[in-house]
Amino acid sequence: MVEEIKTAIQSGNRFFITSHVRLDGDALGSELALYLMLKGLGKQAVVCNQDPTPEQYRFLPAAEYIVHTVDNPEEYDVGFILDCSEAERVGSILPYLTEIKTLINIDHHVSNGGFTRLSMLDPKASSTGELLYRLMKAMNAQMTSDICTNLYAAILTDTGGFRYSNTGRDTLRAAGDLVEGGASPQWISENIYESDSPAKLKLLAAAMETVEIDLENRIASMTVTFEHLRRAGATMDHTEGFVDVPRTVRGIDIAVLYTQMEEEKFKVSLRSKGRVNVEKIAGRFGGGGHTNAAACRISGNIEVVKALIYEAVKEL
Image (cartoon, rainbow, N blue to C red; front, side, top):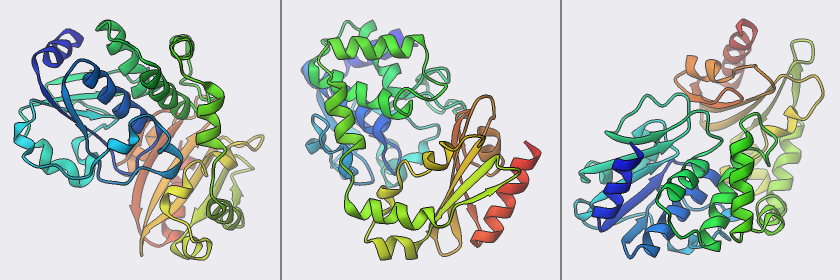
């Protein structure tokens, strides 16, 4: 399949790149690295996302070129859908994709059943960034310092700073190669993890007051509501990383973050340690992800949603 993707890139001239709603480091780093590679090959390319780029990722090289609408999508030769286990994850960008003849999906989610003819899928990969690193190496593409920076950011964020179980030998070798190519671990980490706004700190303080620990101290959860966001002057983007906070407590196997999306609908983010498979929990409610990191959305008030997750966790 890699050879077919290489052929599509070599023969195409105009490329459309997108990823999922509520952008994270892997999605953005992967998009921008691919964009820069294509531009380096003399191709025309555009990165088009539904949502704005979160503040902590705006430092990434070429982030300023991301757009949210395009004209004449049918004129693009190839569309890349990155870090998405299903087409619907791109949100309002989906109608553009239906106009593009050749679609390529590059993704590492275990829940991806394959929705494009051309794809590069590997649930054992740490990130979509790692898969793009492999593709670029297979193409003997020029790995500029800007490309390396974007790919390193993608891998860094989806491995939790190389702390999660998806960090393998190949992941670290790729990261080392990217550093050699010009990525600065300190500069990238400072921009992503040490540049939060006061609003995020206020939101975290409010969320910490909602912490609950159950099942003999094995599951910990936090909740973020519209009221918390309003009082802190924060946005949904500011909740990134919150689910990892209760995960740091000794003895906790599963961490849960409940984020209010509508009056009676919550996004449920799940993280786990070791072999505890939270993807099974998310899958039960129509979501997906990985063994140690998954998410889903559940309708109902917060008490109903918590009860459903609690029962699913007990069964697991």
